[in-house]
Image (cartoon, rainbow, N blue to C red; front, side, top):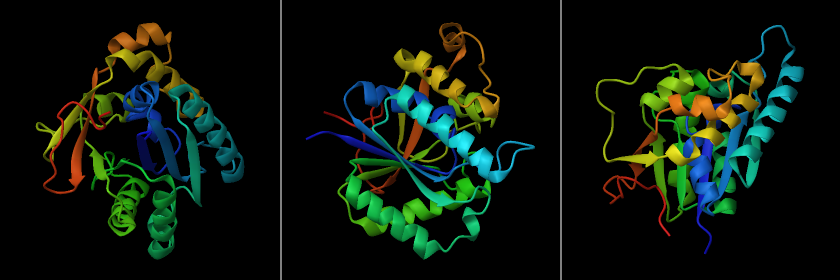
Amino acid sequence: MTRTLLVVLAHPDDESFGIGGTLAKYAAEGTRVALICATRGEAGIEGMSPEEAGQVRERELRAAAATLGLAEVRFLGYHDGELARADPEQVIAQLVSAMQDIRPHVVITFGPDGISGHPDHVAIHHLATQAFDQAGLPAQLYYLAHSEATQQGCGVPPPPQTAGEPAVAVDVSAHLVTKVQAMQRHASQNPPYPGRPEEEATRMACHEYFTLARPIAGAIDPTELLKE
């Protein structure tokens, strides 16, 4: 059976800046990696109309997804900046349906603080967690954890100690060039590593961190989210 990893995030670029190394690693190893993005990032390009910005950022996301090796990208269709005001039952129903269709072995989403505190990030955390609980899948749910990687990609310094246990540190050192390339696909977001990917990769953190949310008392491998 093909292993499947599902990532549920809020905006185009969340997948590359925060956890692009992890997604590239598992895709390269033969895992089917799918992404659900709640919005098209319509509010993310200053001076551009929401409709045009959404089109630009969707193209950027699809290019980044191809670079990372993602098998599928789905959009929920909510407006950037308004996810917290959406009907939660409707969003959860969409996510439950998608999870039951995709049948992931592992689901990844933001933790309670959304890494950066963005309202859309916090909202998708709550919505994806509730959907996971309702979907009834034999799967594990992980949250992005603060780390040097999130500081580099998202500009948010990690706390003195990584919050949450147990934690998984995924070694992405072999996939950092791909991560930088995917980040650079999001040109409208002024990626923080704009130079030659091979050179920029030498400056990137070699591990991305995740905390296990479900099952609460589940056993984990401290270096892997998915095993053969």
